[in-house]
Length: 126
Image 1 (tube, helix red, strand yellow):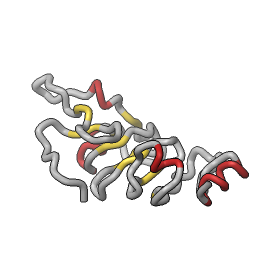
Image 2: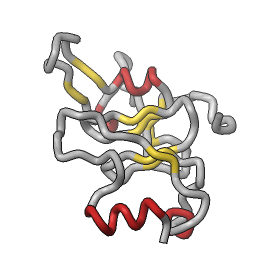
Image 3: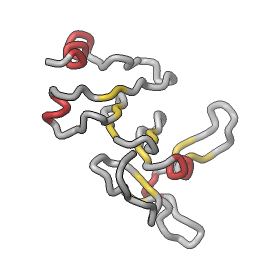
């Protein structure tokens, strides 16, 4: 059992998790071996307290709706409203369309569930 697994077993939640919904979740890298490796999650994966994981330095995870995006631009597309405190909201990525009526975001071609812009480069993770 890894140190992280022991912490979860003892406290019922991962390190950095909080019951305060306004506090941003901590992110952790997975241990090189252990239960996550057995589940097929890469050792370099980044995790959120919601259970989502992703890889790559360009990916972004929304702490409001817990959707994951392949870029900051695709993340920004799903946010709407003014930048005044408490007025920004999330749009459902599957329902966002361009002015021409085409999908603005599509499911990412990644080993983790996420969203990207159509036609974006799908090269190696960095």
